[in-house]
Amino acid sequence: MTVTDKSYKDLSDKAYWLDPKHKEYAPTLKEGSYRKFGDTKYKILKTENNSKNGMQAMAVAPVDKNGKVDTTEVVIAYAGTNFSDAKDRATDLQTVVQGDKQLEQSPLHPFQGSKIDGQAISAQKFAKEVKAQYSDSVITTTGHSLGEYLALMVAAENEWRNVGFNGPDPSNILSEEAKKWIKENPGMLANYRNRADVIGNFGGDGTGAEIKVSMEMGTHLNPVDYHQLSNWTFDKDGKLKIPNNEYNQEAIVQQAERYAMTEYIAKLYDLEIMQKKFQASGGGLSTNEQIYLDDSRALAVIETAVAEFKAVTVHVIKVYQDGMDKVEKVWKKTLQEARQVGDMLTESEILAELESAGCTEKKLVIEPCGAYQKKINKVKKMSTKFDDLANEIKQSIKALKQKDHELAQQLG
Image (tube, rainbow, N blue to C red; front, side, top):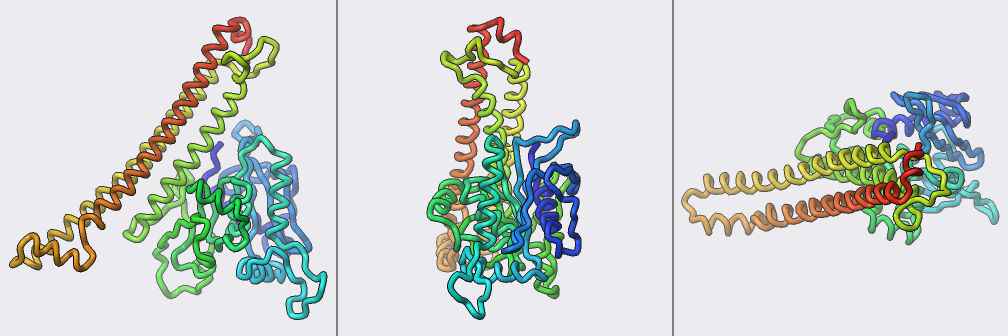
């Protein structure tokens, strides 16, 4: 069960409810309980409401239509700032702004031993506990505002995927190992930011997680209005809607890249789990090993995974190709308008004038198209790796059936 953008938003929103001081505090958010957030039902696996530093978080797993808890993916949602809580306000100042993972309890009158572990430390500790308990799960993080700041930090430090909203960038508290992982794994972190949100855009974009969206909300709102989680809207499949305007073209491409990476990780994980079931020497399973996987079901899972990932890659490649078409159209339109204005000039003179203004075919078409082509090649390379793994598992199944026909008949 793949967690959608909307599900991440719903979880980010409800993480606030763990705080008794919040107006929508829900005492029923207890470990082991079941709650429906948005359109999806979840089991709450673990929660924390840290009374010392104010950190709130919950780990959940989706429940399928048959009532089965699907712990193949666990989501950790971190709560954002509750402005009525002094601990949250202190975290915003001392951690988000100043980059200190510890909190000074008496900032006006500091004294030796007055610092305590801040929310960043508690957030990482919570994640470590969840990871220990669900070691075979794919763990992702989410949050809004301060919650996304913490969620991004935790994801980077643990090499997990993240989807969140309006979060300040946590580069000021990341380890060198986390920064290195971020550079080597672009697309794993997605921090949707409203272009006009001063709060959410704080800290730059050192993580590279930013997907900045122009929300077309006008210019006369209270600054806090641009920061609200409720501003984001989603389509029927739970995908975040990005207005298709000129400013948002880069955001649309970035979103497509994130979806490709998400699908790649999810499907690859499914196949790798399956591969472990066929990892005995000789390409098959030993006769004394207990197996719970029917070969025909395994093949169906593989074919479905391949088909779904192919569909995603086709969409992403189309986004890139559309981008290439757009830059070519811009160049043609620029040339056409220049020819109309400079009808007394030769073609070479028109090109020279455009070049003096920084408008060249190389800059507007060749270089962007080259960048898009590199992205297309990267997606195709991911697809090849995916196909190779799928074929390897198919061969393992075939070898198993040939090696031990009787065991193959008993699978299931």
